Image 1: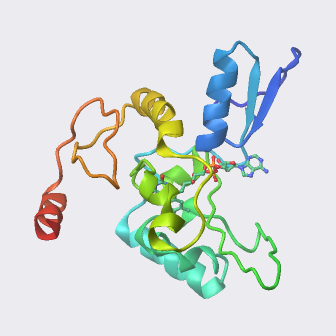
Image 2 (image 1 turned 90 degrees about the vertical axis):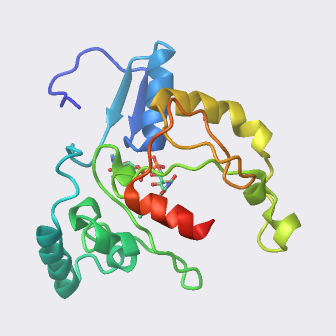
Length: 195
Ligand SMILES: Cc1cc2nc3c(=O)[nH]c(=O)nc-3n(C[C@H](O)[C@H](O)[C@H](O)COP(=O)(O)OP(=O)(O)OC[C@H]3O[C@@H](n4cnc5c(N)ncnc54)[C@H](O)[C@@H]3O)c2cc1C
C-alpha cells in the first residue's frame, strides 16, 4: 500500500482499516467508481516474513509473557503458535468492557490484519449455525439463512480463488473452489483418523 504524502483531489469515500471488511468495502466502492481512500493504522507485512521462526517467536513470546505487554493476546492459543508481533501490545491498545461482561479482544495491527494470524481456513456458515437454537436449544437463531448468503459466498470465493476439497457435508458446505488443493501428509493422516 503506497503512502499518500500530498493529495489535492477530494475522496468520495474513506475506509478505516484494511481487514477483510474494510478491504471488501474498498473494493466495492472503488469498482463503483468512487475515489476511495483506505486508512490503515498498521504497517505492511510480507507474507513470507510475517510468521517468523520457531526460535525468534519463542523469545518474543517469552518476552511478552514476562513483561505482560500482551497479557490478553497471549491467552489465545494461536499466540503461542505464531509470531507475537502479529498481535497488538495490550498496554498500548487498552479497552474496557462492562464489569459483568468481560471480553477477550484478540487484535492485530497490520495491512490485511487478523487474517494474517490464522492459516486461511475460511469456512462457510451453514444452516447448522443459523438454526442453532432450534436444533440444539442453545443461543439464538440468526435472522438470516444460508440461502440469503450463498451467492455472496460464491462471488467472494471466486474472487479470492478459494482452494479446498468437496466433501459433500451438510454442516461444512462445499464452496466455489477454483481447484482442489492437495492435502498435506499430516492433514491426510488426520482425515483418515477422523473418518
Ligand atoms: C486468532 C484468530 C483466529 C481466527 N481464525 C479464523 C479462521 O480460521 N477463519 C475465519 O474465517 N475467521 C477467523 N478469525 C476471525 C477473522 O479474523 C475476523 O472475523 C476478521 O478478521 C474480521 O475482519 P474485520 O475487517 O472486521 O477486522 P480486522 O481483521 O480486525 O481488521 C481491522 C483493520 O483495521 C485496522 N485498524 C484498527 N484500528 C484502526 C484505526 N484506528 N485506524 C486505522 N486502521 C485501524 C487494523 O490494523 C486492521 O487492519 C480469527 C480471528 C482471530 C483473532
